[in-house]
Image (tube, rainbow, N blue to C red):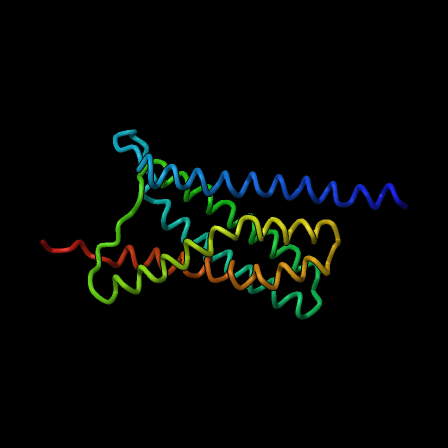
Length: 186
């Protein structure tokens, strides 16, 4: 009994180190491509279709998260599991597409002015700040479910779900706000 009790924290520690490395790497790479690199014009690679794909993946993630939440409320554990793993997969594909697009094209500037610009910046800022926590929180939630540590899973999922849902929905809102903004007239 004593040996298995000692191995549990070690395996959790290994997961948390892995989680930290993955999470910090994703944020650092995103910082690099948006702030330092700023895209590579003239590469011949055209990924301008990706923002629409990414918005669709965000919308899909939001739908899957809500469906999974409703499923677990109705004790449909298997449907909940499928929905949450699918939401994670959809969000992972989003992140890959987002990084690829911004690696090639750099940042997209909002062109609107006045109150709509202020609203956009509030939504964007909250989206960015909260999105930095999604990777580690979602990984932790999935890890505890996989380990069948459902008390810990529920505790982290109660925090993760509303933040992940907000980030997914505001990702779609930001896409439409960027597409609807018109260039400023000098």
